[in-house]
Image 1 (cartoon, rainbow, N blue to C red):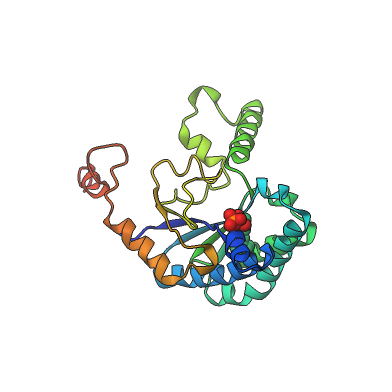
Image 2: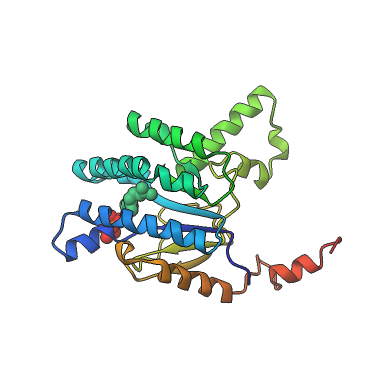
Length: 245
Ligand code: FPP
């Protein structure tokens, strides 16, 4: 099979990595940032078009205050120090999640970097921040009710396409491959609708120890899988049956 167009990652295990080393959890997240940089480079090298990283879920606000503050600081320094790398590599930054609820300085730094990179055609890096798939669906439903009241959406004729167009991911293809590190078998409120036909790869490696070769191993596992999208045929067979091929 071809390489995945869109790889999404649930970066898990920073806390356990730190605890096992008698370090603070935030030290684990700091190390996790190093992995983020490595995996962005690995995605570029492997010609991945879309990389989506689950950095902060809406439920993560319930963590101890110092950890939440630490994560925001790490995010701010990532935006500040990675700007050059993103611009140099023509990486287009996007976000999913209710980012307007983030601290004002973080929100503004994100918006500024998003607009500086929006014309780029290299890797599209989407960071899920204050993201919850269930909240994303709630927001889409509200937006659609609003459109219907304004007369721009005909409720009678809604299909999944209209729902997808109202999700934060409207400009992204669905993920082909979802990688979760640290050996947990859960989606944790991440891209619940968009993952309908995603292949899922679980790595037992904690995120701070995850590297390019683990990433490439996940891709090569994906390439050996057969995706049938609910049919008994794979996608290339289906393509060959399309009228114009
Ligand atoms: C999961 O580990 C990780 C997170 C909740 C945060 C991930 C964030 C980063 C790697 C840094 C910010 C990212 C970017 C893109 C700038 P955990 O704390 O849940 O680990 P545990 O399950 O072992 O406790």
